[in-house]
Structures are given as structure tokens and as C-alpha cells.
Image 1 (cartoon, rainbow, N blue to C red):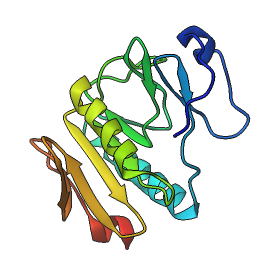
Image 2 (image 1 turned 30 degrees about the horizontal axis):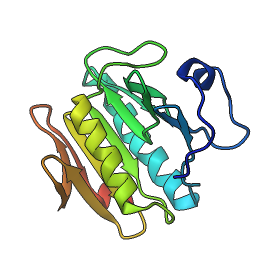
Image 3 (image 1 turned 180 degrees about the horizontal axis):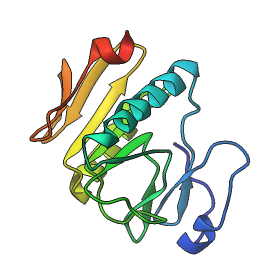
Length: 165
């Protein structure tokens, strides 16, 4: 991700970008990796998975939503799931789940730092999905590969077969 000219957070929040929305960190606008078809497909399937669970759980999924992790940090996770209430406008409280979907040009060091920021913010379930390698990872005290993504205490489980077919 390349940092560009420093601007204030309010200017950033009032800016729309002609292509892909950008993130904000301490005065810098951060470019995001351009998703390919597989990235978009997996992001849509993840959103649909959680949307289907809204009838049985008090969850509110969203995609590509700007979130204020702290005064100078606004990230845009690929998928977020809020619980038990739907957030307003610019969420500033941690969602239950944040999911990042890897793009081919993502740098792992940048992704790991971003996942760590979500954990520090208080997100209980920080997940990384690699659609090209068909792998799942959870970020708790470290980044570790798992076979299934689960939300403890809610009976929610996502398998690789369900997502990747």
C-alpha cells in the first residue's frame, strides 16, 4: 500500500475516489489492492453466507464499509459482521467478525499488520481467506491456518467446501 499526500481525516471522509475506495492512516491515504474476479466472488459468497444467517442470529453483515478503529485510522475490511446491533454511519465500535480476502498483489506484512490492528481494536474474530490457495486463517495471538472458520458460542461454522465448492 502506498501512502500519498497527508490530509485531515475529515477531508478524507468527505472524499470519494473514482476507482477503489482507500483507507486512511495518520494523515496518509492508503491505496488498496485491486481485487480480481475470484476475490470479488469470495467476498460476495462470504457476505451471502452471513446474510442468510440474519433470520436465526442477531447479526448484520456488510462489505467494503469504512470503520474508524481510532481517531487517525480508518480501514475498509472486505467483510464485517456486527452483533447484536446494526451500526450507524461510520462504525467506531468493533464488529464481531472482520474478514480480509487476499488479493494476488497483497503484501503479507501489510495484511498481518492490518489484522493486528483489528485485534487490538477488539474484534473477536479476525479471519483471512486466501481464495487462490483455498485456505483459511484466523488471527488471534498469531496468524494460524485452520480448516473451518467458527464463531464460538453462536453455532456458526464456515467450511472450505461451503465457500470454495
